[in-house]
Amino acid sequence: MSTNTLQSIGRYRWTICSLLFVATTINYLDRQVLSLLAPDLSDKFGWSESDYADITAVFQFIYALSMLFAGRFIDKLGTKWGYAIAIVVWSLGAILHAQSVPVGEALSPLLQGIGIVAAPSIIGFMVSRAVLGFGEAGNFPAAIKATAEYFPKKERALATGIFNSGANIGAILAPISVPIIAEVWGWEWAFKIVGIAGFIWLIFWFLFYEKPEKQKRLSASEYEYINSDVEDKPLESIEPKHEAAEAKVAWSRLFGYRQTWAFFLGKFLTDGVWWFFLFWLPKYLAAQYNMESKDMQLPLAVLYTMTMFGSIGGGWFPKYFIKKGYSAYDGRMRAMLIIALFPLIVLLAQPLGGSSYWMPVLLIGIGASAHQAWSANIFTTVSDMFPKKAVGSVVGIGGMAGGIGGVIVTKVGGALFDHYKALGHIETGYTIMFSFCAVAYIVAWFVMKTLVPKYKPITDL
Image (cartoon, rainbow, N blue to C red; front, side, top):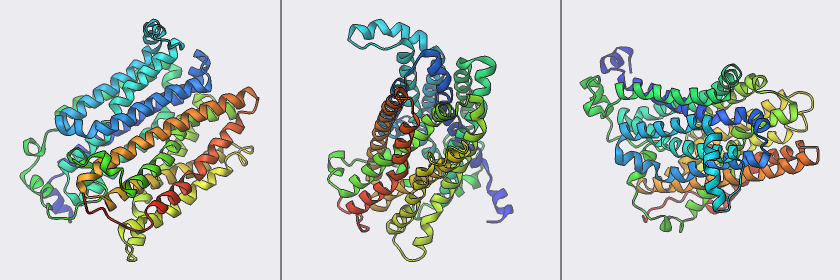
């Protein structure tokens, strides 16, 4: 399409895409503040590794459960108000972290009355993480719905790739900004400022977003263009997620299919790796290399910059095999097998880590980049095999499985680190966890391939 044609159509839809990008960036900034401050907060409040694991596990568990219902919530309220409520909740949750100790002190007597005893700081941060996880679950369903509303199907993959890159940008900006804010104004303000950013975004959301049919800033030609390809084949990675709330197939019936279990176990085995990298890498650099938060800025920024290559390349890679004549599913599984080999390099992170912290950072960066490529494809295996009316439910089931897997990885990691820290060599605990992170994908691939050896779409739902 020529530049003149694009100008005659209009570009307002990209304003909406920009809003989605910024919201996703804020989303990842909010969830990363705690992990970046964890070494300092652990010293300040006397948290053990297991205490920190408990706090992060609450976020993962609530986020996983909330993902099951977030899409239906967004569809019921509509994109404008559904997204607004989600960001209000998670921004309040972010700000609440700054008051975690008073919150914990207020709740401690009540919890002690029912037999739950924990330090006020732990209780307070658990409550804050729960609120954050509950609200953040609404980001991607709302952003995908807004993309479906404002973009023709042929542009949705590009628009989704742009707003989804906010996750990587947020992961890059967090280690650069959070330590500086904490050092200058105190750790509480690191949580407050990223929370306030959500409310600032909300102003622009209400100023610029409205349903396309009610949007006065949208030209008639652009509105016509958005709705111009209703007969096109739906993009497999976008359309099913948008329709998640419309699925009517019972979960009990879906669990009768091997394809559901393939996705369930694939997510269960691999999602925890990403959560582990996201929440534990600052603790790892502090424990093994005695790094302070400000010293982690560059290595973590480099690591998460690397993940952008996986995000971009992962979606493209299966097309190589599909163009050679493979079905979408078979081509995707071939690509995923190759992708699953890359995390094996993380096995070298500890053996080579004695020379410089840059060795594990770069090797883990390759593993984390591979996760992004894997994630882009495992979601799409669902739309390869299931009809649209069931995809949303299957994706929700897999999201829950991935969240539970993340909770287990976090809890096991915390216990291992406490155990080996007491023995004086915490690095052994990280060696064990990195070994799991390295082999998880190849194990998951063989499990998925065993359950669904060949392309077999579900046709009886």
